[in-house]
Length: 213
Image 1 (cartoon, rainbow, N blue to C red):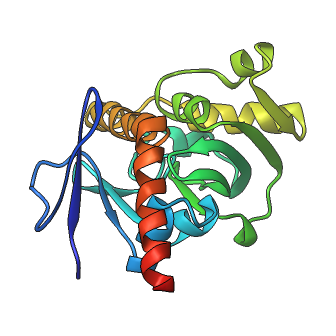
Image 2: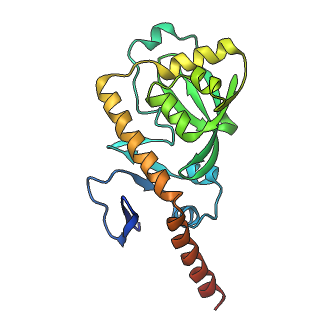
Image 3: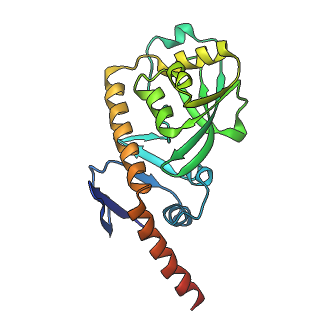
């Protein structure tokens, strides 16, 4: 296993070093080396990267939407069965991604590949807005009013999905939600920074020269 750390400050990538990851890192990504290289160099589509990557934030394994590790006490009393929400997330930290969030009758939620889902509704929006919907009490209706989301499906079903996603969390899970949002949004900001992209482009140029030498 090869380990490397990217350390960012307010100005961008401050340090990139090999070695064992520190215990207090904000975000851990675990994936095959070719996926890691393809992600960092911008050579792979977001869906392939996400499906091959295990993420950890605050000691919890998670996904790009952060819904899996969170419990929603009491929600099981108001659910009706398994329900799939198709998600088209634009500009995740890894690129555009299609997936689905499966809403379970016990009140838990799970991100699954789009190919394994049977969505009753589909939601298309910026990844940051979807994260705020899942974690920061941003209502789906507000996104629709502001024309920041495209919804394909029955409005009653949309209301059910919105209530399931926005159900109040336990205090410890709310704290984790805040940590998840800060870590992933900060990572996206740095990954989309033009200076970071320029560094990756230079690395790709060197890699191409060495490959053809």
